[in-house]
Every structure is written in structure tokens, then in C-alpha cells.
Image 1 (cartoon, rainbow, N blue to C red):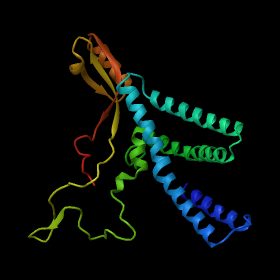
Image 2: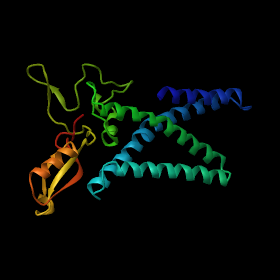
Image 3: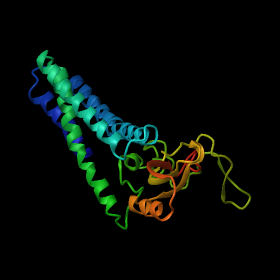
Image 4: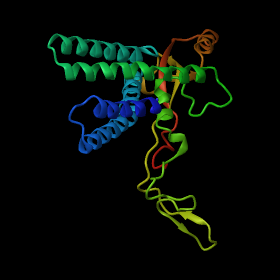
Length: 247
């Protein structure tokens, strides 16, 4: 996808030089800079941003409103398709060529990046190599941000392979010692999907009895242990105690 976006920038330069009658060095440089910022906006904004928004909706719909798994994801995609469709229709009706091309380009871009669904499908197959376990949109966000690789060094200012981390100093034995994690970035929350057995005879804060990975296991437990039980679907943040100031 990065290559295709880079090709798009090159195509813009080609049009500027070969189609435009007023092409000059300044115009070529401006077009190149715009292409670079467009690539950065796509890589850091549209791709992880859309997935982050979808994952927040998913967690909120399930944990706050008690809706089933994937309800927030479905709502987000319906909202996204509706917004793109309305934007294209409105821009075409009002003959706003710039807005029409921009929204159409964004729509085609999102369709292209829908190939990331292969990552989720592959992860659900539980392959031996399954970094960050991106089985749904909630866990896919951390995968797309490449957090499993840590902080990416700057091309111009390091850090180098033997550089000390922030707040790290050499000890008396010559080995690096970490004095504090202040200033380190937080890792994204990692949520686990669970089917939770609730005891309806207890208060809301103490009614969670047991959580299961599979719904069928939760149903079997309820049948085996007779009581006033119900099964709810919830997301649990599994790394809440370790994700702060992690890298």
C-alpha cells in the first residue's frame, strides 16, 4: 500500500510536468511536498485513525450498552459507507469538482486498504506466527501502529544500536540501568473478548462470576451450576497494569 501511494505521488509529478502548461521547478517541488504530506496523513491518520475509531465504538457498544460483539464495528462501517456515499452525491450534485475528487479518492483508498481484512482472517486461524494477535479491529489497531517493534528511531538523529534509552545510565558494573520511565510512551490498550457469566442475585459491581473464551463453554457452565445466571459479552483490557510508560 505504501508503494501504491508513492506511485500516486509520482503520477502527480508526471501530470504536473507533462500535462500542465505552466510547469516549473517551484510547481514540481510543491507537488512533491504535497505528495509527502499526503502519504504521511494516510499512513499516520487515515489507516490507524479509522481502525482506532472503529475499535473505540466496538468497545463502547459492547461494554457500555450491552450490545453483542461486532455491533460497534458494523455501525462504524455503515456510518462510513453512508458518509462517503452522501459526500460523493452532494459534491456531484453541487458540481464541486475538488470535493468530488477528494472524497472519491478517499473512498477508493479505503476500499484498497480493506485488504487488511486478510490480517484478521489469518490471525483467527491461530497461525504459529501471530504478533499482537489481531483477531478483530480492537487488537488490529496496535498491530497497525507496529507497537510490537518499539519506538522507531529517527533517520537523522538516532538513536543508534548502542544508544542508552531515555532515563538510562551506565551503572558501576558498566551495564545500563534504568532510573525512571518518565517520558516514555504508553502502549495501546489490548482488549480480550470474553463471554462472562453474571449472577443476577448480586450487585452490579460484584456480579461477574467467570469469563470464558468460547460461548459454548459459558453455556455449559451455566447448565452445570444451576442459578440465576446470564451470559454477557465484554471486552477486558489485559495490559492495563503494564502498558503505561512502556517504550
